[in-house]
Length: 77
Image 1 (cartoon, one colour):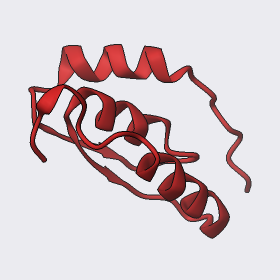
Image 2 (cartoon, rainbow, N blue to C red):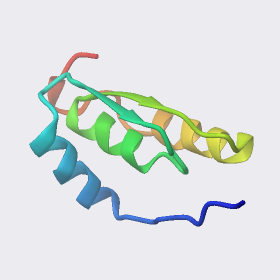
Image 3 (cartoon, rainbow, N blue to C red):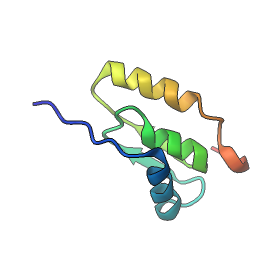
Image 4 (cartoon, rainbow, N blue to C red):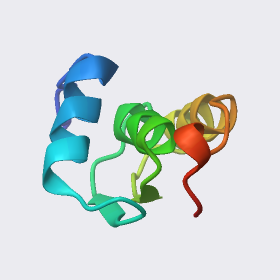
């Protein structure tokens, strides 16, 4: 059974992460997809653990997250 994508804007995910996870907290994303939450975590200084079953999407997420400036606003990992 295929799981349909659930696209959400990165800006919305970043707001949710900033309001629900403490600075330098850890966000677990068990359906990482293309890495939107990982990107938002990097931008907001949160740590990220993403999981997925599709190798192609995992690589896309890895590249996407790595392209974000590491830990914006001076936050530490």
